[in-house]
Every structure is written in structure tokens, then in C-alpha cells.
Length: 406
Ligand code: HEM
Image: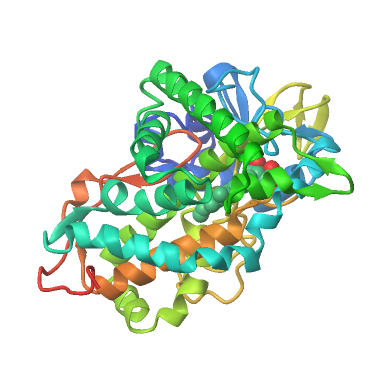
């Protein structure tokens, strides 16, 4: 499929838009550009039909109006884990959403996530030491994945003995779940049983981890039930793992192809916090679903009650109406009001943690491996679905590199 600009071809592109198609995922931003220019409120006939939003102001309008655009169904097509499961708080609308979210906020404040810095650095170094003498590595599965995986296991208080099981559930749900939905459901079920037992354990004796912190969380007399907490832990795992892992991979992929920026960041890590924001703008992985709660007019089209909408945060982030030179990644971009972490009531709860993880993963990588290049460009592919991120990113580096085992 080639991306074209005449109106009838763009209409066809809109009608056939499918974020689950590998060929389309590979040229996602070319499609976004054509839709944003010519058909900004597009209707795709795939998966039973859904609207596709690509303009910055449209995305903002929908996300700031939860009364008309509900978060009950966030996946298109609906319900990877079945529509009976609600993942709080991401699939809750007001007023339930606010009550629930306030109970989860504490562990994720900018100040509270700092306590993980040493742990994340240690994990990065340990993982790098496994391949530092190899001269090449597949970044996604051999480096980036382990940073959020190990941190999440630590935060949840998963014992070293159980880390292998945890890694296997994550693999079955997030890595092969799209092609093996039964395996993903089975893994999700096993993980729920494990987490439910762990919650009961934590009720009996409190520990220094996120489960105890959330069990003890009380705001205005409200507390989380065990069932609430189970749903929330499940969401934290799903929302916090794949996203961060994808961002680390995307940033390393970018640097492997842009040696000047790579060298600047390696020479001056103080540039990293600003660069991380730009990586999140440029490679924003998330597209999230909403459903119209009533029939309404929206920027020239009639959206019917119940219609699903796919809100493309990444497309909004490259809208020329909102950003100068949006298709260029500028590592020291000054003004960057991006939507990579969302906007409105559901904006990312884990954004401070994600920033910390991505920054440290890049800082430790650059310290150990300041020079590297994309070794097998033809292999790189982009994950399909609602989490767009690069896979099979094989980079090479000089074996004389040091620092991984420090
Ligand atoms: C670079 C990594 C990440 C990106 C790009 C990202 C992006 C997003 C986006 C765009 C949303 C809004 C979804 C919506 O409006 O429906 C969101 C929500 C959320 N994220 Fe993240 N996220 C990241 C990492 C994390 C981490 C590390 C955690 C926690 C461990 C986390 C937890 C959440 C939660 C709980 C929500 C739902 C908040 C609510 O509904 O109030 N995320 N994230």
C-alpha cells in the first residue's frame, strides 16, 4: 500500500485503517499524516467500524470530555480480556474514576518514584553485563524489556523465586498474546490468582512494597477493596510494562541511526530529561479507545451513541498545528506540550516513573555503550495493535566497550 494524497485514495485509506495490520503499523505515521491533512475524523470499517482521530485539537477535545466519550471500552476491537473485566482506573468514568485514582496516586508522585533510582540503575548494569562482550544485542527483548519487568517485580514484592513465572506471564500476555489469545487469557488468569494470594498475604503482614502501600491507602475515608486492588495491579502491570519497554527500544533505535544525537547525549547526560520528553512525543506508543455516550456532532460528522473512537496520541503529537517541524525529532526541543502521556482525567499515572526508567535505561546504556549502530535494519518491525513500538532492533557495538559490569 502506498500513501497517497488525493482525496478518494485517502478515503480508502481511512476506510481500511487497521492498527492490527503489520503492513500498516510499519508506515503508521505516513497514514496519520494523510488522514490528519485530508480526513481528520476518519471512519474505518474494520473491526465492526470505528472513528480514527489524528488532530491535536480533536484529541484534546475528546479526552477532556469524558461525559460524551466514555473510557469503558478502551480497546478496539473490544476486550482482549473479555468485556466483563473492568480495568480501573483507565476504564472508569467520573465520578468513580476520581475516587479510585486518588487512592493510587501516592506511590507515583515525582518525589516517591525517586526511591527506585538506585535499583533501576543496578538492574540496567546487570542486564548490560550479560551482552557487553557480545558486540551485538537485540535491544527490545534482551535489554529494554528487563528494565520495567524487574522494577515491576520489585515494586509488587515478587520474590526472586517467582520472577521467572512473572516474566513468563508477561511474555504470554504482551509478547505473544496477539497471536495466541487463549494463551494470554490463561496467563492473565494465573497472574490474577497469584496476585490475589499475594494481596491476602499482604493483608496478614504488611511489607515495604506497593501492594502494602495501596492496601493502606485511605483518602477521605475511602479505601480499596481486594477486588479493586487486583484490577489496579493488573492494569499497572499492563500499562507500565509494554509502554516503557517500547520507549526505551525506540530511543535506542533512533540513536543507532543518528550518531550526532547519540554522541551529544553520551557526552552530556544532563540533556536526557528533555530528550526523553521528545522521544515520548515522537514515538508515543499508545492509541486508546473511547465510546460515544450519545449521538452528537463532532467536527463535521455525526457520531452515533456507542460508536467506538480510536484516539491516536502519536498522531496528535506530530500535528503541525501544534508543533514546529513535527516530523523531526529534536532532542533539545524547547516547547513540547505533547500528549504522549495522555491528557485530561486519565493522563498517565505512571509518567514520573516512566520518565525515570527511560532516562536511567538510556543513561546507563550510553555510559556502557557510547558507540553503536543498527546492525540489521531490514529486520526492524513495528508492533501492531494499540501499543506501537519497534521490535527486532539488532544493534552492533565495539566489543572493547566497557562499563556494563561496573
Ligand atoms: C513511556 C511509558 C508510558 C507511556 C507512553 C504511557 C502512556 C499513557 C497514556 C497515553 C495514558 C492515557 C490513556 C487514556 O487516556 O486512556 C496512560 C494512562 C495510564 N498509565 Fe501510562 N504510560 C507509560 C508508563 C506507565 C507506567 C510506568 C505506569 C505505572 C506503572 C503507567 C500507568 C498508567 C495508568 C494507571 C494509567 C491510567 C490512569 C487513569 O486512568 O487515570 N503508565 N499512560
